[in-house]
Length: 354
Image (cartoon, rainbow, N blue to C red; front, side, top):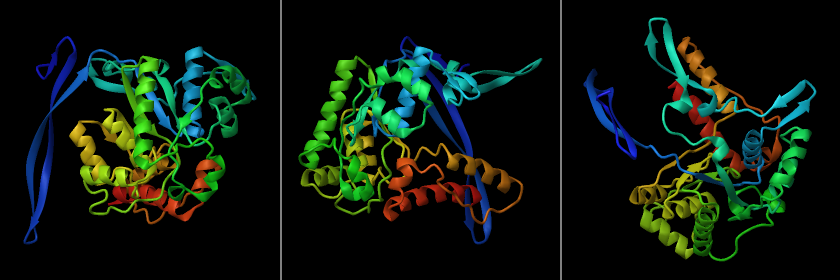
């Protein structure tokens, strides 16, 4: 393609995004075509990737670590319906396909993972933090997600993994989480951020990874107010941390990651990315994203509501129940933490209906 160039280190693709800009003037709707030219650059060298999970000892952290280990080791185990073997079914990169175009015999599909140089999940190195001191094997057993026989095979591998002490500010999560908090950082807020930065550097050096991504998979926090002079600019946010003012743990982790040049992904529905954090990421040219994983009920709701709207049916209400409960449900039993989840989940449906 004339829009794609290859160098020794990069693949660069030029893409024109076409859309329309709509305005209303004196009751008249005006439509103006517009286009934006993008250049996407992808490194040809696949890096050795490290992922540091905040909340490594939780259900998500233990399960994803166990899943990668089970695939890497080629494990299989018996269940009541027969023998199961580890696989990556459900993985966007490993199990989905993309239509390249049409041939005389029909559409041509290729695996998503073959489009560009991509890291294989088996090659990811995990580390992370948690307010609970349980090693990953004990945390896996506490989570009660995996079949017992698989847990037994994974135990000797996961008991060697222990989360680093994490940031714990009680007022941001439900009070019932205090019983888990036996592995927490001490010192001032600024000292805790500095320790997070040291942890990232230590992991990168000890593991030999080329890049580190920090991913928040810990408890949902309550929302933070956006306050001028506190968190509205990067400078004010850093000053607030130095003074020990109100900054959430997830934002503190984001700041530490950004200052270390590491991409940061937020997997919970609180407003981690206050304006000051966004500005700081922009200043350091660091990628940040996310306001919730939305991997369960929310994903299903998105599909169903889109179908209903497309069929000309307006969705007036939608109800969810947390049948499984687990620690996510326990944390969300507190009104302020539930409100964060409620806002995030409602926005998904509202955006589709509108």
